[in-house]
Amino acid sequence: FLSRLGQKRICVCDFYYFNFLASLQVVLIAHFSASMIMADVKRHKNEKYFFTEDGEMEAFPSIEDPHSRELSVVVPSYNEELRLPVMMDEAMEYLESRQKQQPSFTYEVIVVDDGSKDKTTEVALDYTRRYGASKVRVLTLVKNHGKGGAVRMGVLSSRGKFILMADADGATKFADIEKVEAGLRDISPKPENMAISCGSRAHLEKESVAQRSLFRTFLMYGFHFLVWFFCVRGIKDTQCGFKLFTREAAQKTFSVLHVERWAFDVELLYIAQCFKIPIAEVAVNWTEIEGSKLVPFWSWLQMGRDLVFIRLRYLTGAWKLKSPRKAE
Figure (tube, rainbow, N blue to C red):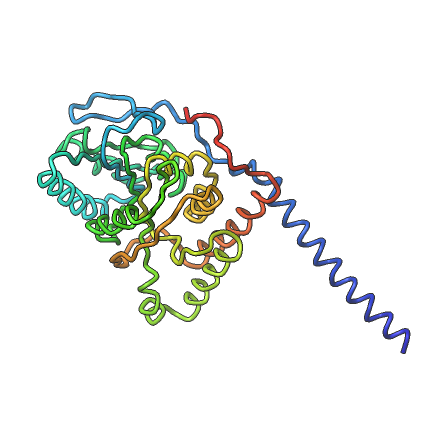
């Protein structure tokens, strides 16, 4: 009897020992691999300029400059030659109509071509020729960074007092900017004028569950749990690509962002919560558009891994919440 009891204790000790080693290994991998995926804030010389409607090259401004527009709209685009025109037509129609009704309202749209292999840049430049470079600018990245990297580059090149990130597929009705603007206004107080308003599809979750397969529903809830457990609490939908920032909040968060792929939204909101930046979540209209770049299983798997690593890298000090050197 004593022999069997001793064996059970050894097995239990072995179990906890191997769990400890496995956890330690994950922490060490997260910490020492952090430097391998640091966001590249250096710009290729071609990424420092945009083309005007006359074909002249001019330098992009910096988010560190004072704002000179009321609103900047940053549109990350990768191989979007087919979907981008629909989104841009809707956005430009709304923005032009708003400017006619409110002459003091000024805006710019920055289309960030994230190293596309199709004619995304050419399609976007057509809007520069139609509306002028004061309203539409195209930032073409030499290589693919990922959605987070593209949004970051656009934000750092913006002139707006408020900065909206909006997906190129037009899944969110552009007029819903008024809803996220209202959410931003409702946040009080705004320390150092920093606030974020997130569009949300959480109200559509029941409908989406009914339309999804059991496996995809399992992945969705698993991802939500990981977001809540490791990074962000109080925000039901971190992934909606329709977010509005004050200029100060955008500069504070994007200047320390590390993740450039799909999980960047989570890190962005994690950073905001660490800085105690107030965040509103506002229901918006959303329609699923064909042509998504998200591969369901592998993308969710990658995002799950990134969520764990985001938390561990900040906990171990591999990543720090302080601004790096200025973007070149």
